[in-house]
Length: 637
Image (cartoon, rainbow, N blue to C red):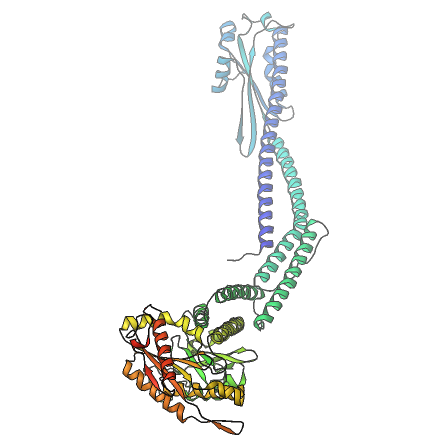
């Protein structure tokens, strides 16, 4: 539940003020009532004591002057005093003993009076009679010898003896009414004062509560991405300053977030959707760009292109599709003549799963290749005719999954041309997801492109260092790196490898007679003949100058001799047209068996070279297998 902070603040302060005021008024009323009651009682008490003392003095003088029998008239006249209602005198047993129990015109003591006569202590009480408040006081007459006349002049008593008591009653209704009116007036004044203070407090707190409410709404709007809901400045004090500072903060955040969003959206080509939360969108973009940065650091540390491709697929799949989606990667050959599948649905493969096979040999049929921009088959499902939307083909064959697919094909450029193509295939359920992730996927691909270019250049550089630039054959450095794997394979499989050392006969004469261009043409033609004669798994190496080395995998010596003879015969028939002339050459070949002739590879190569030497000595244009009598040196090579 959400509350308006301003209303809540107003309510809390008002409730607190009203509660405090109510308590204060209640306490003040109670204190006032108690104070006026005590004042009334004390006043009435003093009033009765005064009247009682007057009655005592009068009765004493009446005793002395002998007119005590007229005391009742005096008491009746005394009761006529304002507010006094009754007055009567009772005698104590001590006076009865002295003067007898004749009580003509006198009253018998009641319970209260007997108690006062017994204890000698005054008693006062308040009673109500027919709505009238009556205050009664019973005051003892105590014998003393002070003054003249005094009690002891007539009574046979000792000082302190109780001679009698006077009881008087008076109405305090008017006094109570006056007290209540006074208290009511005080309470009324206090209530009015409190109300005035409450109004003043309300107007003092109103700017605070309104500002708090406005700040609450502004903050909530800011959380929702809207920083344009400014706070109205209502005062020029600290509250107004808070409103101004809040507005400056909102404008600063709005400007800053728009700049950040603008900068990042330029990198990922993303437009803000209507009503989109700017704050959440910026956070999402910053988070994704951070992950892209971490991804780029990771791929820069990968050694091979295949590692970069695998990391690209796994990152996009896990980041945006929770492992769903089918990714394929194709690489364009250097001459743009073919597409080579690198990964199909995440696994190494040599065929297409989702496209027509003809694009592998004719890349121009690939729309992403010949347009060099994103092919969005999610929004335009039929944009590419070579994409098969139904698994297994248009007839719905395959693994039984007939759900239509949608594709995105991303070209990755190298030096301004398409070098690779990343294909993402999804189902209907992921269409909205992929469209939302599309800007970020393009950022991943954009950052992957230069890393792939570096890896391609490194592979090209490495390949050029291991290949003869003129003939396109591997060079001797390649053999030096490959020899350990070759010998390990031969020993593991317990097979043989045929080693052929080849040398053109009288090649120097070609260079001297027709020039080096003619010599190069002869070497290129020879390299072509050798490659077409041997298997693709065999290795053809330009060993140096006009010397060539052929390594025949898993080939016995007899088969190696047959291959060598085929090469010799093909070379003998070879005709090279250069500069209007036709050149023909022959070749001499020495053959050795590894490990039949030597368990050391390089010594077997030496034995093939020795056999070549003997072929030259024997008249050239022939094939000789190495025999031990050709090797006079008993030391190992």
